[in-house]
Length: 212
Image (tube, rainbow, N blue to C red; front, side, top):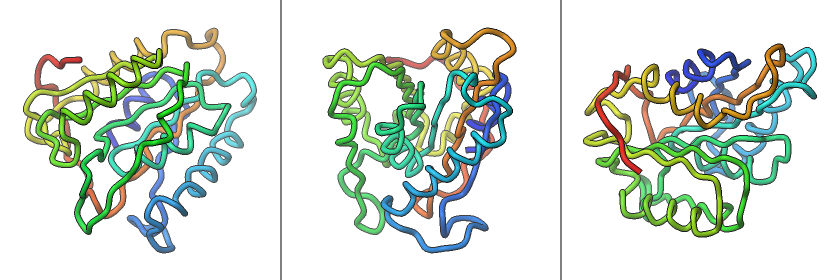
């Protein structure tokens, strides 16, 4: 989560990172992905207030890790001001700890906005075959998807200690090549914090070539 925030910051974004209700030092109780949509909406609005001229701030990106990718991408599906979407470690497994599961049916409709997805091929919460199926479906619909699978990396990317500095920064720069003219301030809800499904990710360093 911190690395995703840093990746946006290093690309010149006005970037906001936050905890969902009931996570970290945030008050409230876990809402199983329903109430958390309101958290994303509040953070999105707050970031707009922190920018001098939000109408000129392009692109506007929403990204999340694990549970945060599910909630963040669901919010982005209905947010017309969001120009780019980022999902890291999508929890696609049909059964997760605590008997939970998260549907990504909001991606069933074609969406022309760029979608950047990154997972590890040893992710215990995101089987690679389900990830590849999701990517293939998106591409069949004509969606603009950039997908990366990190070899030998688990859900937290600590098996290969991947570095966002050398991988995600380059990928973000490529994915956001249609940025506005210099002088505008892009904004990003850079990293929606995951809930108790996933502990804080460890420090990450580059591990090698990716695929997809």
